[in-house]
Length: 228
Image (tube, rainbow, N blue to C red; front, side):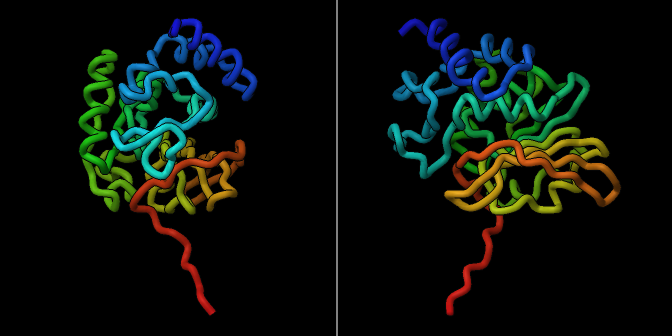
């Protein structure tokens, strides 16, 4: 496989048609080697329009566990967050470290939380191999991850790299005024990527971005299921 042709086709055939037109984002996707963040046995899937399972037991099509999101979803979230060079970012759900690498290229500092030690270790190696020095991977429990990182708050940007039933207010409160949080919200099969912006001391605006489905982030509350 010619990786550069595959990367070009990914951008032109998957990402641009998803309304990702920010040239800074497109240039970043052309330069950060996505294939270096994909498990070795699944490297052929690096540029495919699908979620890529991250743990060694994962196989193509198995999206029950942690996954890299589709390239077009990663790109669209990055574009919508409009990360600036002076900003501080929190990511919850490090996974392979690829999204942290993209964020780090646009931000001043990135903290990324991962509750699976195996993935946290791999992400550190991936980021080091990619020459990323301003992203810090933190090992946390799932419950700790769902609480964010209040000791480093406030943040300009928070990204949940996975889905949740709803975004906890505790995370929204860790945004600066004008800060943005992106997450995939809902219950399968109905989920939407949503952008929250802090507009006041206790006020946030919301905007639905696009429909998608993403693996669950561990540690976040699920809605109560009633039985009659």
